[in-house]
Image (cartoon, rainbow, N blue to C red; front, side, top):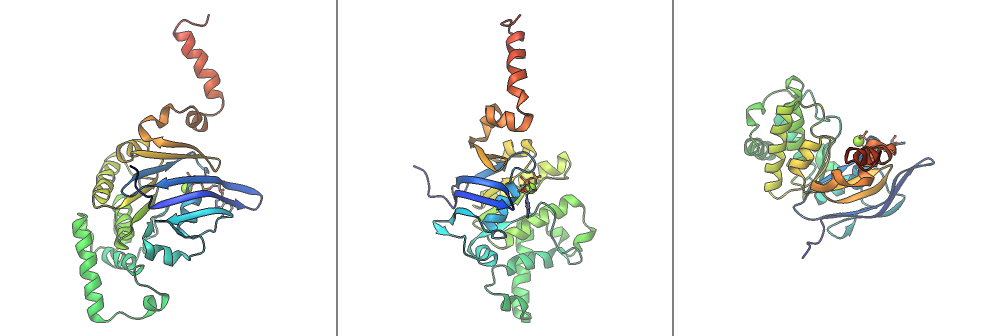
Length: 269
Ligand SMILES: Nc1ncnc2c1ncn2[C@@H]1O[C@H](COP(=O)(O)OP(=O)(O)OP(=O)(O)O)[C@@H](O)[C@H]1O
Ligand SMILES: [Mg+2]
């Protein structure tokens, strides 16, 4: 029995000028999934995130959160409904402390813009701060809570950005290349961190070029190429799919690899 999806894309297309960068893409993200959205540079992965989070409107198709159509809702409303994301480039406030950045993440749970602009009462401030500190502790990064973000190593900033997205208490978290720029040890550390987030019950949709991370963390992968979906299946077998191989290695791949393999096996003179 398959669970009703948290997030569904149904026939979603997006054009910029004359260029269709997302082409009739459909896929479902079941609750609790650790799903990867992969594909070569320019395949449309970040655009899909921008469509789901409401930065862009689709030209065609439906985007549903737990069955509810999102296309006409503004970005802020979608965050309140349980969609959080991180960005390909870190977007923390560099001059604020770690805990203040987490508090900004919590604010996306507050309903309207007016609430954002109203100065918080001392009581509310201490409540939000305590909650932010508790989250940092739970995620094992509370030793950085008072540090100004700009002074922290890149790997820690990437983690803090994930914690900020988590502060909105999302149902589904979309992470855009969380391991980009990290070394092997930092990537291992981040993978364990994301496993921990998944174990808390948060559904993950991850764009990532590091296939080691994808294989370790994600059970399911959707592959895009030139805006179209070319694979939707287990991560374990994605590297065997001929369309995926061609997308990553070029159209000559099948033409050169197959005869060489036959030759090695002694089938071709
Ligand atoms: N605002 C925009 N205006 C015009 N073209 C855009 C815009 N945003 C994205 N594109 C184009 O859409 C295509 C897909 O871009 P997108 O950023 O979604 O790719 P990606 O799969 O995230 O790639 P990468 O792995 O390099 O991050 C690219 O050709 C890009 O140039
Ligand atoms: Mg991208």
